[in-house]
Image (tube, rainbow, N blue to C red; front, side, top):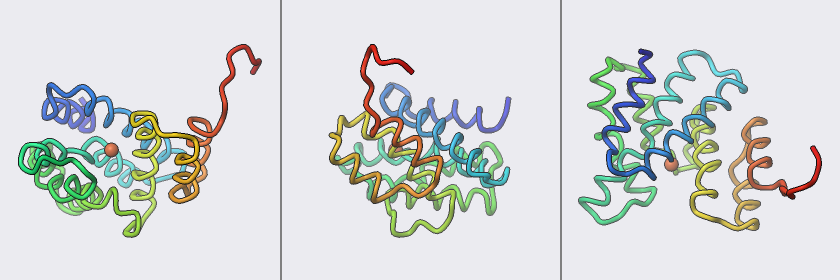
Length: 171
Ligand SMILES: [Fe+2]
């Protein structure tokens, strides 16, 4: 089995009993992978992005258990130490592990985005969150203007949240 598929299974096992979180990171991974491929990431960058997408919210359970909160800051603080043993188990080490842990530790801090991988992870997360959180059109428009930079991420966000679906209209 591919290492990334093994990582997906390990992360699902870590989050067992919490289907919402499992669905969330599987969706974020799917969007991150699509954007990463379409935007031409190298094989290694794509690998690290995909791993970070599976693991980005792994700090949530410890945040809830230890501090009673699961906001972005606590996810960033607690995520890396939860993710590290999973990466070690799959021999994802060195600079790759460092980048994955960095991406986890900064995925809600848009001001620190320092590369296409970090940009894509943030975009992929926010392709999923408005649907899960039930946001309105105005806040979606604001998010689109504030965050989206890649051509592929923009197009996907428009298609998910800014287009109107009317049953019965032709394609
Ligand atoms: Fe997320």
